Length: 296
Image (cartoon, rainbow, N blue to C red; front, top):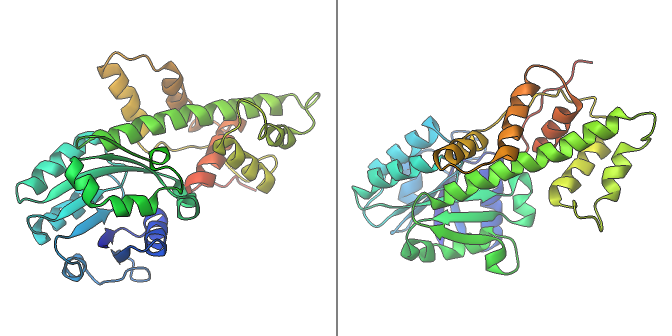
């Protein structure tokens, strides 16, 4: 199978490598000449066999809109576009309608795995028609973790469902990271009693009910910087957490824990805190998100 991949940043480049390692031929395009396989989107489309499949892996919002609009003018009826970025699910309806007017199919794919996905595989949440999902199942199988398909892949529903599931996933992620971060700050505050904060988290990795991959990544961050002194306690939010809260309000679903984790990130922009250092460190570990370095 041969697909196109637009966007070869931290996620896209690793996805290209994993796909190729699992027998999928990939032609990639990026505006960075150091990583691209072709010089333009037109060349990308020309390199693909019909019916074409193009996976879009660029930042959500205006950049995704521009890429899909350009593809709309280059692709033909029967081709397929997959948006694997972090687009808001409501944007999927717009993109599907735009492409559908020319007979081009559309799938939205929520992708989780961060910078570790190349090695471990990616969790995939997919929205679209059953026929189109089945058509590109070899691509999803190549990207997902090894093991039973249902443990790393789900066809959630029709267009929009994949990004909706990814939105809720990220809202939960916000809350989990905040819980670990607050625990870190509380332990760190009792220097008279707690003598080994990193060791405490490390001991929780086996046998305890709070063990998880996020906990392992926090331990990794503490191994690299035991008191997180190199990190400023400033944390961005990429949108999904806010959208989760907005959806909860619209549907009268109480999400107090997720909501609190979003507001905690706003607090991080007003003052430096140990908890927010921990959240910043976690985001850097799993997603390669940039951190603000503390002044030395």
